[in-house]
Length: 469
Length: 71
Image 1 (cartoon, rainbow over the protein chains, first blue to last red):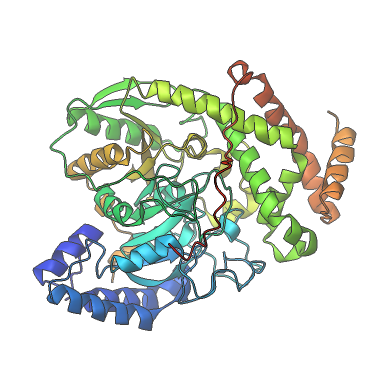
Image 2 (image 1 turned 90 degrees about the horizontal axis):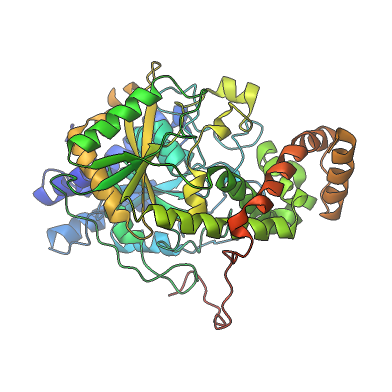
């Protein structure tokens, strides 16, 4: 087969139609990795033989009528902060104990395997899902397939870049301040941060215990829905994870009766890319044209949630890292240690106060969701930043990329949010919007995302580097 | 908070945490500290949080130790 399916759901359909086999999909994934990964830095570990064996099994099972669902036989990847028995977990760090998680599967990984997913390898992350790429450390620099001089975003860098480049159909990422939606935005793919407590986060190296979300990056909203159906559900090792069944929603004919609040305040600053506002307005117009009742809203406690996100991450991460920071400072990436060390500059009362304000904001957002069913906002205010600019300006501060992401708010209040591609900058870099929903109502965002993607083609655009194969 | 106060505070808190970054990184932390402190202080100015219960978790019945590779 020379023309391979573009999306996970199309690949699943092609498998069942006999138009392609899992082995063919997997060989193609391996061939693409052979050709592209040297310039993209997606993989930290590849499991080619394991993946091919899993593909052979998937083909045999499907041929015998044993169908494990839409991920069965589909090449997928896992961010290298989740444990997977086939290889070590590094968290892209020299510091993580190599014995941590050795030979074991995180619950999410075990669920993917049970669903018949073909796991091709572990993919790059910012160190411990925070900080920035550091060329002085022995890990590949992840690069954006849309322009390899730019960064794919983080921290699920390899997940976003790999999906965009067609190295796999879906990858697991994690989101503590935006780390699923940010790379999804920069790489022009879809990414779903599920509700806090929807997916067990045990077996994943923690960043912020009360903020970490595990979820999928894939080409479409429908692909993300298929993945969430597999990884969602309680696990006794994660006390935060609740028993709230999730079923991928059926495609909707339109959005009649769906009330969508649109946020621009604090989301499109004077530093935003000039193409963002018209792209976002066009995306909202598509939703309205499909029947949605669109109205302007504002997000309560925006500034406070930006701060609460930072205070909570720094404090929770310092608790995990303090011993290693004290003894192995230089082994950490420069940006990682500088972010986490700031937890030492905060008090216990600061941390608790952040959790009190999170509760207040959570309730205010709950009130807002009595007036609307979804909230739409730009995911990030610009396209992918170049490595040159990143080196000169760093991540934090006004006008810098860290201040241009609109994602941490939703981590703080725990609602699900789905990032969707909506266009391009003048330089040809992807732009994105996010649709947030009520807690445990991912289906509403996914269904609206599917309707949006039926009406647009942004999610089918491919970088020249990937499409040229 | 002036720069000298920030430096004294940052050095003391890093030391208390057992952290000893090199001078150039201490300088970066000192430079960013007043803004971090101001942002954290602003969280105490949210009137609705005056009597709010924090979003923390602790359940007395959670006595089982469940390994994540099981279950």
